[in-house]
Image (tube, rainbow, N blue to C red; front, top):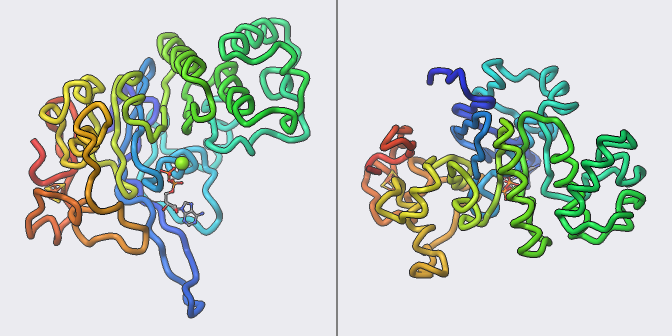
Length: 310
Ligand SMILES: Nc1ncnc2c1ncn2[C@@H]1O[C@H](COP(=O)(O)OP(=O)(O)O)[C@@H](O)[C@H]1O
Ligand code: SF4
Ligand SMILES: [Mg+2]
């Protein structure tokens, strides 16, 4: 695929496998991400939505170069048009990209909150006071160590760390669980403000509702691949505006829609179907779907990985 000059991050055909040992101590490759694609531009919030285990956190780790040593990776990740190398990733971890990790264990246990959210600098202190206030964190939170924070507070501190950074790209991995509705809305509003300043935001969430309310575009992940990317407005319109059978089924499964669960379950790595990863659950599958991996096609301003999506 051609490089889009406007994107800050562009991912094509990303696959990730883990080297594992089976019960007979033989080495096997466990494929956890297959031909995944994603892009985000300055000023844009792209939500990554998908069930637990669909590869959302691995994507964040792959971009930042934080995959475990037994992981092998193929495909392309470009940052501002440059292929990501371990050296560039190291630089970006120091400033260009801010991660809001899914686990609060990422906070440094030995450093007070102040040092992890911009330090004593006067301008930073004023900004931190403003951010903390909006997220409902008490004033003296900056004097605390991570072990003194509740889970919900720790999560808001992690979000603040990214907000107070000058990163051009923020990857927020499930930033809102443990927050009140008001705090979640406040956090998402602040991400929107950062996007208006020209930052790019990847908002990872298993909450598809939240994704299409706050994002410009939504990427739907399934079993480690991207099945559809669409303008968020298509998700508001409903199944007819969507392109992939899984996205349509996800929409239908929402409580405010038919609340009809999707029969079956997402396949596990190591037990992936040969052709389309959604085929075992797809009401539209044909013999071709079981044999061949469908290509990504551009349709109506979005992308879909399905032979028949329209
Ligand atoms: N270090 C690892 N070794 C083996 N499998 C892993 C590892 N990390 C993640 N996985 C597997 O990769 C898949 C995707 O994981 P993850 O990206 O954490 O999902 P999500 O964030 O969407 O819930 C899951 O099936 C998970 O079990
Ligand atoms: S490629 Fe076939 S099985 Fe896969 S989503 Fe499309 S119709 Fe369903
Ligand atoms: Mg995750």
